[in-house]
Length: 271
Length: 319
Image (tube, rainbow over all chains, first blue to last red; front, top):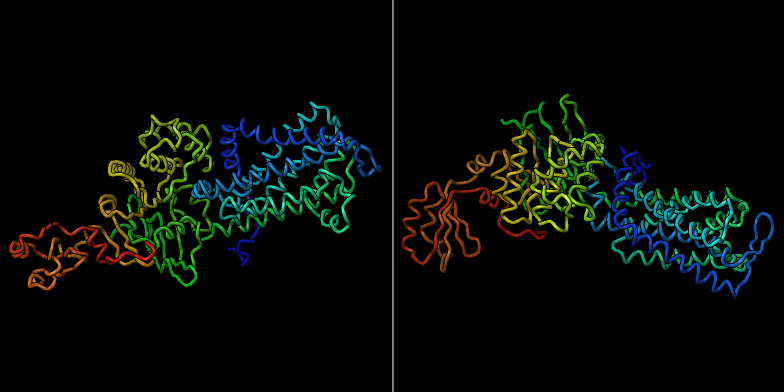
């Protein structure tokens, strides 16, 4: 049946993921207000404090884009990068702590698998759910950014689907870690050793151009760098340079991450 | 012999099932079947392979050998696990050992959300919810969350949830473990009600009175192997003497060496209690009058005696 591929066989996905997604949505609707505050208030505080506070010291930042260099206010520079970070964080938290609670602590997944729903569909539902949380957070933050007048670029409409892609990428990656976790503590490694360094190497707080060449080479292949490279120009009413390359980087991380997450989750549930 | 051994009518038929973890064989060449309307009890010590067998029947664990077939609809068409897992599970009801109720949902929402996993429409499920809650004696708890329910209520909600798709066959893994006597009796009553409705049940349990009360047929497992199978009363008659005299008190152990031994077919010492298994207890009870300081209990042999005879009295390492 599995033709020797075992846990690495192709994902068997179906529409049965939808009731699982709906389940998460129903829980979230009950807890939406506190979750909204946590997801949106905190990134906005960072943005306002650093953007206006530090921005007053920094002044303008030079962004090298497709149409040459542009001078932009620091708050715009930071906003266009930190929106990607918010998408990443929202997706990661949901696909780590919340998914782990459902999978391991509450045994929700075990209950679902007694019904005609495959593990593959549950993992897909969790991935899309975490991406939904990311896009919800991003939408609210974008709304505030518009209200603050940080950017009024019409191209922001295009940033939205890109940020959904960012959510999908990071929820897929987080589900790999979820599949390996023995407890909540395990996630600290992922945050401290992967997500936090990446935040500083992806051009969110400062331009990558000022980094040493070796570090830049690494940074060029990080999913968050590609996200920022795609989203920032849209904030500046420009087009991204090398959009296909960056989209491809995100796609490889997303598809690869999901596949590995599925394989490791299958291994975890195989018994 | 009995309906469960029939070939054509069985709802579930398992043949030659094997499961190994490394060098340990947890299920060893196991075969059994369940006929419509039957309640098959699977009993055995911890680690006997009961839960692993259920997991394989649900396609959650892959057997190393063997064949699992279901025939759950009127056409009698055969579905195989794991190939037809989704079609099979659409027609099964399952209560696992640990409750997997959603803590964030009310009782009614738990049923609604679970029904959706079967592809049922919200309207269909909502129509069934009052009846399911009533069956679980939870009508007044419709809006309560699982944390507000007692252990027995949670188990009954799990049972109601397993009925949301109106299955013909239920797989119940230790449905009454951890319940107090009242809750257990209510659960038994409900399971009997389901059997009267014509549903079939596969049930694992540690409680011999539960097995004796509910099950039309029993499967005794030990170390993954089937060591006995049959109707509860027949099994007792086949393996045991009809009468048991338990003797305990100071000096009871000395009876093991006394001439009283000859009055019983079999004598066992467990701790400070001597068990006499006999065809007729009269002579033995008369003789015991000479030991007034010892306390005696005369009773018919039961399933627990059978279980202990077949699987031994010693505590299992992994128990």
